[in-house]
Length: 251
Picture 1 (cartoon, rainbow, N blue to C red):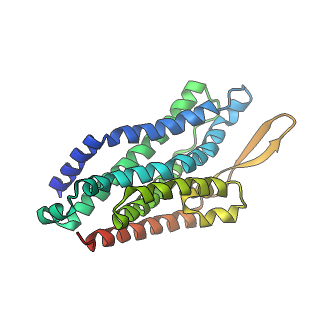
Picture 2 (cartoon, helix red, strand yellow):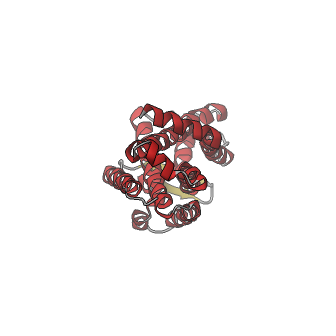
């Protein structure tokens, strides 16, 4: 198993996966920072505005980012026509386990860098609102990680089944559009669009919008534990579906 993971790390280095993992959270944070409140009265609710907008940005970026990571993870085998050779050198179980472990590590890096960047933005912008409690921050991190994993394994499943990265990338783009579309629809629509689960899982909501003074009031709703559990379960189902597809793939 150690040898398989080491081999996947070497492939990832040649694919420059680290650049993708760094670029995605940087893009998300810069996007949020560019739209961050700057007025003295707005800084008192700046973290609420940040955590309200960040899931929307994730809905735009993450489906495509997960599609890129998943397709690149298997594309090197397709382009090199190496699955048959690999299966004679190592078990399919170890190959899938190494790829899944690398994918999860890359997702962990992306989500953690994004979470760490939020207080950095607050420090640079001199937010006066206190940073959310540890439990709330951990919940937001867990929601982002769970949804990313669910999308990643769905894209990996497509890549293994079709032996072509293009359909996975197209689904990632479609997921971005559907997720963003669901954000402007009634709340119940979001439950049928898994790519956009970042938004219904987010506890930050707009309570009031004073159009005359252009002041937004935010509120925090209870954590959406049933949806988070459903997301984790769906991610697990897709994980085993991807393993089943790789185990039974003809080469």
